[in-house]
Amino acid sequence: MQDPRAADAPGLSAVAGITPDTGLSGVRMCRSDGEILQAVGPDPALVLVDAPLVVPDVRGRRDAEHVLAWLDIPAFPVTPSRMAKVHGGARGVAVADALARMGHVVAEALPDQVLRQAMWEREHPPGGPVLDLAAYRAAWLGVRPPAFRPRGGRAHHDGLAPARDLLADLADLTGWPPSTRDGDLGALDEAALIDAVACAALARRCLDAPGDRWAVIGDSAAGRFVLAACPEMIDRARINIDRLLSEGTIGIPREVAGSDLGGPQSW
Image (cartoon, rainbow, N blue to C red; front, side, top):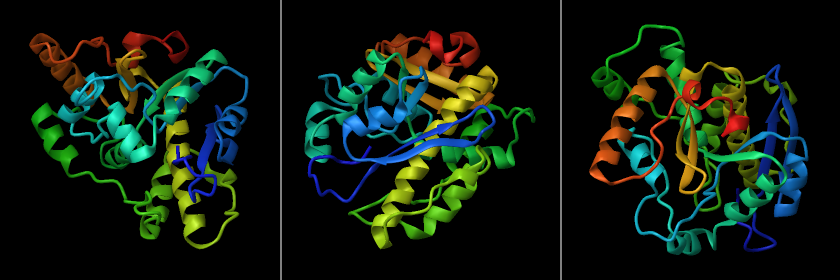
């Protein structure tokens, strides 16, 4: 979700859905929280959001972010002061609360991680040989998704097409909407759409794919991330969660595989 502090802020937020046949649906560009809620709609859904949805009054990382760091998955450390300084507040908290009241299941997602996993699966298709964790970690460190997200109000134009190419592995992009703004504003919209479609594709994966292809780390009270996963990532997450729990660093549930957690609507 883009920064809403100024009515004339250049960035817009994007909402997208993925149908059971992997087609795009309900794609909309939004500015206000109300527009986002209207775009999601009333039908109960798994809604994954690229924004912090829980901002506890603690220093340093949230529990799930400790685990992500040990999985070599970058995540923006969330504290009230950091959110106020960088984003003018935690917009996602109110949006998540409203979505939950509407009957939706809500969690955080990391679009870059979804694209990175798509890159991984081009070389390591699901069902292939499982790597030992040392080999997996070394190979995972070499996977870097294209840079397309805006920096300083400008999008990385060169990264937009490669990012969309990766999304085409996850969804039918025939319904991708044409740009309604020109130049850098159009590129900013494109970047927001890539983020939204990556989140939607991951939600579809949680609903349809086996439990070893997605993972949940954390909980709704302390911050809950959903990841596109593989057996190696899940094994690595379990090992690190157990270690961090035994050290007293974190206090979140051990379960990380979808097959352990049940369907998303039961979270």
